[in-house]
Length: 67
Image (tube, rainbow, N blue to C red; front, side, top):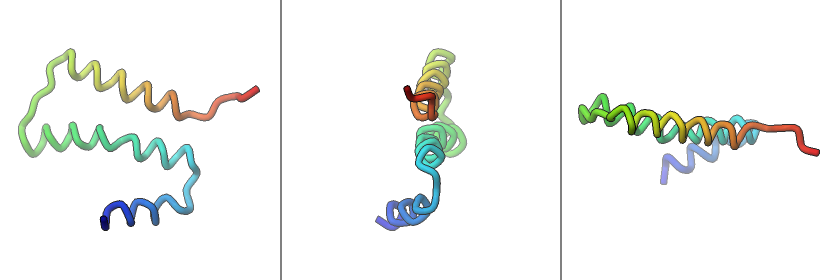
């Protein structure tokens, strides 16, 4: 509960797009933590899937020209 409260407090003064991009990095930190702490290794296929998913999340959250 403390972490979620601090997240809301940290988001309060930020731009919506910036905060959503930062929060989408949660999966990146989980992969890095699994690699560093648990010595987990991703296959090339899994790594490529992670990169594609992260790119899709970022592209979906970027502001575009709205007509």
